[in-house]
Picture 1 (spheres, rainbow, N blue to C red):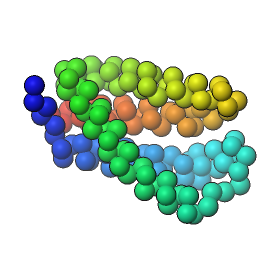
Picture 2: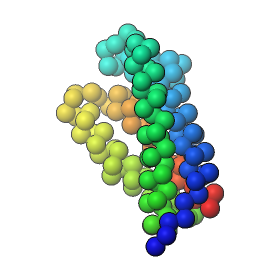
Picture 3: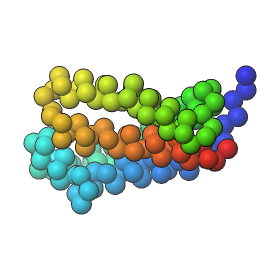
Picture 4: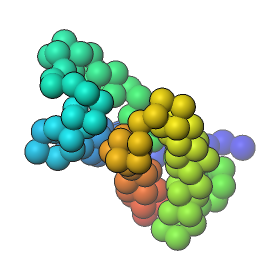
Length: 133
């Protein structure tokens, strides 16, 4: 079975995915609240730059894997794509996030700030990839 990956869609959705995650942690969004909840006053610029660089390929590979799973599952309409991406997030991101938050006593607010943006990204990726076939 040959996978027919729409590489342009994957690249564009990867950029959207990256932008959502990047701006999620801006001080005017959730950045200041996140810093407060983790007990920090700021992050060093070198760490911000490193984390941003790492987010670029990780966003691409996440979207590529989402696309491959959607193709294999036949989720080419919005409804099935949304359901599949909710299941992917719950099964692979949400559960891990709950475990990490629980084991590290991080609380619900921190869980929501750290893991909900991935749900948003998964849903947006699912919609765009399903429509852009």
